[in-house]
Length: 182
Image 1 (tube, rainbow, N blue to C red):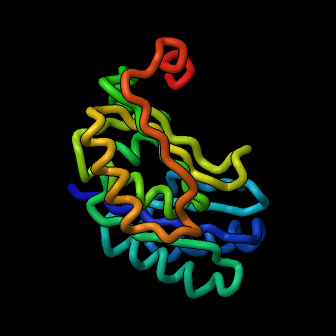
Image 2: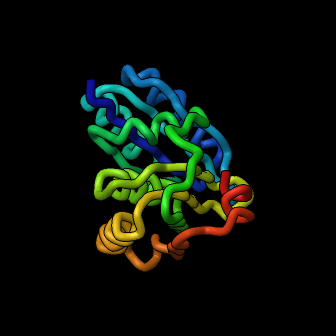
């Protein structure tokens, strides 16, 4: 079954909690992330079938008004992303190269991650979400250099300059860096 995920990122913690409660009452979705994030924002991510996720996120977006920072709906999302929220990764082995993308907002970072995973032969080895990193999303992938480069090129094509922070590609990373990353 194809799963969808959707997210709402709020600049108000109290409003975020209130709307989170309302969207799960409104639509048949499961919460996979619901927390305060840096810097003083609130994020909820839900999963379910396409219609339920659309209903939940559309309703939350309507209720949020000016407190909404960002949002997304991803249909047929890479299952690797849902697993990453549960701290489950397919691999912890670094193959050939490492790529790191840093985005300025969590929602756009998750959309970018889905794009990279679907664009090439890469594996997710780590996802860091907003906590103690100024509300950013940072993810680390591994695979052939050419696949990482292609995925990063795809991301640069979909993100604005305000959403995109930085990238790094490290061919044949040192053993010390490998230990740090895993």
